[in-house]
Image 1 (tube, one colour):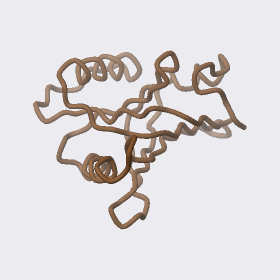
Image 2 (image 1 turned 90 degrees about the horizontal axis):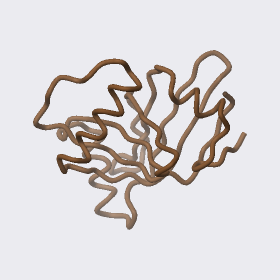
Image 3 (image 1 turned 90 degrees about the vertical axis):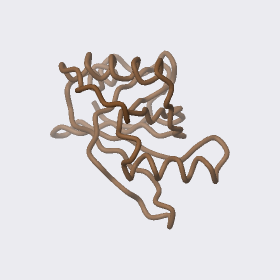
Image 4 (image 1 turned 60 degrees about the vertical axis):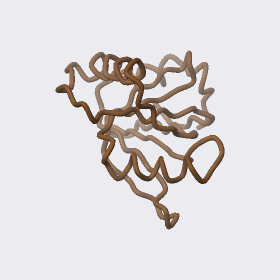
Length: 137
């Protein structure tokens, strides 16, 4: 079932506000998918999803490589599920390293997941500009 990225149904948005482990799928340089568990925050007002990560992680390296090769960023997807409920957000990802973007993403993560991550000077944000939402929530 398709959803409006900027105006999701209340049920879909509520599902994205619950505490769930999600997955992030990024393209490896050879084109194969790399899928890892992550925490994700969804900001429909901005049309963004955010994932905090270490700048040395494979997912960040994948996004950076694709970002350099493709205008607009790497094509990625984030997904979560619980029982029969599921939700996927897709879009173009870029890596943000500026202090304000990282702090904002950490605050959003803390709100959704109920804990503030330990300080990490190597933390970055995978910021996804969304263009597709699917799911059954």
